[in-house]
Amino acid sequence: MSQQMSRPESAPTAGSATVTVFASDRSWIESNAVDQCHQVAALDGMVSVAGMPDLHPGKGAPIGAAMTSTVLYPFLVGSDIGCGIAVFPVELKRVVPEQVARRFPDLDIALDPDRDADDPAWAVVDGEIPAGHLDGLGTVGRGNHFVELARIQTVLDPAHTARLGLAADDLVLIVHSGSRGLGERILRAHTERHGAGPAADPAGYLALHDAAVRWGSLNRRLLAARVLHALGARPTEPIVDQCHNLVEVRDGAYLHRKGAAPGDGRDVLIAGTRGTCSYLVAAHAGPQANFSVAHGAGRKMSRADALRRGRAKHTVEELRRTPVGSLVVCGDRQLLFEEAPTAYKRIEQVIADLVEHGLATPAATTVPLVTYKTIDRGGNARTASRRDRPDHRRGRGRS
DNA sequence: ATGTAC
Image (cartoon, rainbow, N blue to C red; front, top):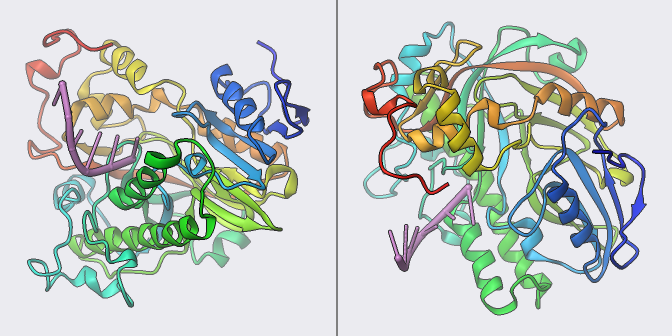
């Protein structure tokens, strides 16, 4: 299938918004996702839609897109307002992945100000909890969210990596999480009255949105503090923390980012998968790309497809012990299949596309050691039971 | 991605 890439093309449906997809023809982009970009381009007030190389279809709006409009559309940011990826230095001498996997705290259990009053993670809170929202504080969530202990593998730009305070073999903690129930509540309040329509009160929406963005960033710092403390390391400040679901007012317009990281002179961690490397990049995207870069490898398969195909292709053991030798802590088998590395595009191609279009310069790669998704009470090293095997299916699947 | 309904 031929795709028009990296050259602005007018939306054929209506309006004057440009649609540009920053991907080479070597990158697989689902046509549904490009269709969604054109649907967005046809919205009232839309000025330009930039698709990133990790572009894939979302619920109503594309994921991996930066969309500039004179009108503020909450659905273009989605429910996980403030979702982002932060990177924390880890000051540990040496780590044994099996031990680390066992020491992760249960990140589905929220920090409770009363019950967990003595938890040292609270030290990262300076001032009020945004929106006074305590539900789910310090929890990682589901879907593509994770907390990962990783190692700097290949230094591609030594000077830039050094400016980040990093060198080859250093340990980092990568946290991908968002605003949990808070952002969901904010979008729902809008959607109940206005559906996919514009914000009736943009300033009002932005005030709530900004609180969710701050909450998401605080949540990532709390997650890092919980994990670092459990591993016997000092809590640290993030060296990178970019939010990829948000809207910002820029040059008098609304720049919506959905699965697209701010790429105007910032350092961004572009996540690979739970079994491949990630990339720390210096991003330098200009107006054509709506000042944005990709946020990850991008899904290649829907969750339903990944589950169906993954069960035929992978054992639970190989998803828990990945090709790069890392461990995945995930007590939820369905999630393990949905998040299989083979369900994602190749991160190397995503990065190559960004480089080719002058949007980013890679500084270093990180290789996962232990990725935490959700608690595994059975223990990560345990051998798979009969029902873990792909040929032993229970009941009838939905898809 | 989410809390909640099925």
